[in-house]
Image 1 (cartoon, rainbow, N blue to C red):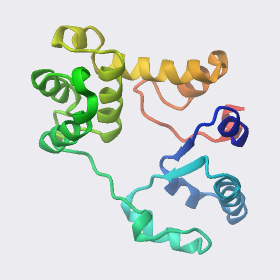
Image 2 (image 1 turned 30 degrees about the vertical axis):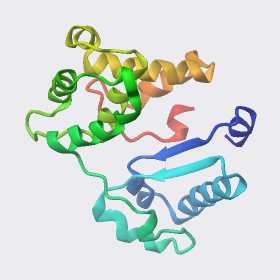
Image 3 (image 1 turned 120 degrees about the horizontal axis):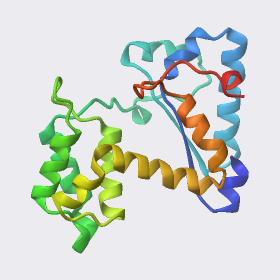
Length: 193
């Protein structure tokens, strides 16, 4: 990871989603993982780590006193209602200039992203959709409807996978991390290997 960051002059962001799973590991495994994370962070400023976990597990992180967890580095990210998502996109697209998507297109996409049961939008899907409509220069509902939410996410993942140069390795790993219903399942590095 450090080599990738240095070779390509990129900042590598490693995201540990569902980090509460660490509490199901043995103390030895917990310490080994956290030591590795801390080493990555300390070796170079080109590696950033984001830890995502459920709010009810947050206090348990205090067990690891050597982690630098403070309120200034902590953000509670919740699903957004349509008004919040629209406001976020409005601010994010301010600098897009002529690529700024029209308001009716944004409203259409937000409706598509919204979960009907909760009337909420996942922040990750909002971010991916925003990135992709700009990078693909989608300007109409018709252009968006050709791909739809799933098509944008798939194309986003394709770009990431192609960027690794290891498409035949990365795709099977990504698919092994979810069920047919695209839900994440518990998988360990040993399972993937």
